Image 1 (tube, rainbow, N blue to C red):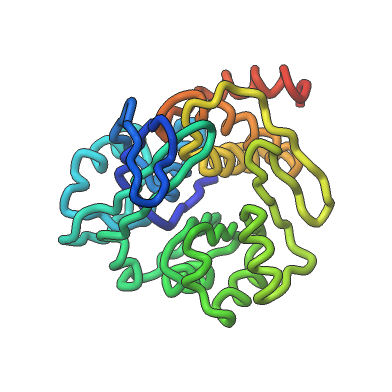
Image 2: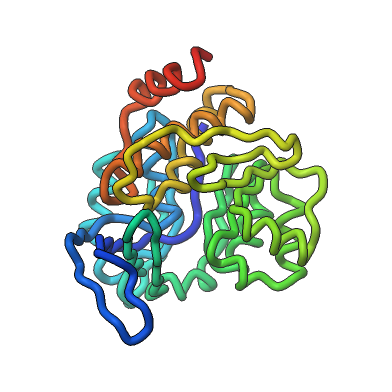
Length: 278
């Protein structure tokens, strides 16, 4: 089973700061690192590193070559739209367990020019609504994750995506916004709750977060989805897939960067410790 992931690729600039500066104030940066990122890329990389199969459909900026070579080396199948603009950037600031992020679309602005491709299993990560709708029409089974691009969907487009999606991934704020705009009924909705874990919404079933020493939470949600998809491809039920997602996320937060995935064997070992054998 191969999962096609559509959405952003980006370079992440991750800063550890003493505190988040208030308006007209400054704060010292104690450490920083440039990492490979972007929601769609993080998930596609995670699926591959966790012993699954993935295809990434995204926009490659003019400065994407090194990142592209890395993706090819680890075995992620690529289908890229080429742009002359710089690759998207995320600027992420961490202080005292809280995170502030700024996102520069760059080459991702050209997503609306991309043509939909066919897929059997699809994860629609945050991306341009036009592309999301067209991709949804050409797949057999898909998960929809509106993320930070939820505000770009008008009511009609959002209603279509919610109705057609087989699985919806969102956080609490996005859930409330979707319920307010279009309503959500009889859907497999998985809500990520940060430190509180996650919840299978229609069953009101909570999945605990796995204890971990949090260094950087960047990409934790993407890691959750990668772990979910790999477990799903192995035939596990939704609850077990969510538990695997929680375990994978616990590894990612322990280091700076969104793509420091463990082996699937290490994931299974930590899963057994916290949830028992499957």
